[in-house]
Length: 269
Image (cartoon, rainbow, N blue to C red; front, top):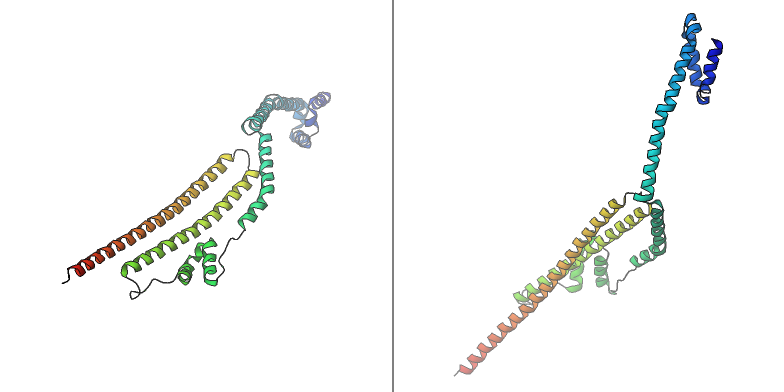
């Protein structure tokens, strides 16, 4: 019996024979077994252990090996076909080199100040409508008035002229405020573009559609603000036409008055 038990133990795989847990389990089972079972059943217990070990190695081990092979095949397909790792690394290198080459130059271009006014009041007004901060719009009206003056009083100008001046000022201030908002939006768009550029340099495979969606949304926002700027320009053109038509109407009225006066002079006895 002893020789049979030893033969079964030596028949186990090396990984099981060297495992401390299996050895402890075997000793524990032998210690709990009654004397008769120790003599008669130790061989059966070792045979059972060997059968379990063989089942784990052959059936379950084969299935696990197949799963590992399938996972390896899927990973290779993803890295070589769906998301080619070599091309992804090449694109990342290109983005990083492009940022290193042009990032500093673009920052210097954006930092250039092109303010040109030299006098105090014009310089203050120019500083406000070039800073791209919507919070400073509240300071716009008094600075505009300091440069372009107030609407003439009723004693200094006719009502039609006062209306035209007031409307022209309103449209001019509205366009300048819209330009301030556009500059602020442009700064936000540039920051978003820089963020997307940074993400593209370190993006994980498969995240390109999300970055493309984010870029598409920012493009739609940019188009919306561009349409707003175009609408502001159209308002300016419409106001210019209205101003010119008003002058023509005034000239026509002046001509009619002159004709009436001339007629009265000619018919005066």
